[in-house]
Length: 158
Image: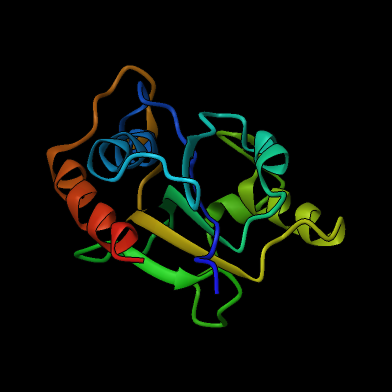
């Protein structure tokens, strides 16, 4: 049996504070693991609509992003959960518009409707409770930067 084809896709803006989490994870993952025929790493930047161009033949999709949970205390580590799990908290980016334009949640629903969504979708996210953490011109907070290695370990161990 062939190994599964895994796509790791990050969203975010490297020049907007907490939004730099996803791109930082994919950059670190590329250094650690690299690309293989069965493992691909992409940075969607602030254009999650580009995700649809990469889903053909993918068995597992791992979305990496900073997730805004207004008014809730962030987790001490990263959230690692199946996208469709009822335990996944509602995310601010579930709204139709986000800092990425159309949200990644809506891109995943579109992929599902088009029959492109892989059987397994995971979310690896740093949970943020303040929209102020996403301000343009900010660098990645050291507390979030420390979570990059944890996210890479969770992904690289698949």
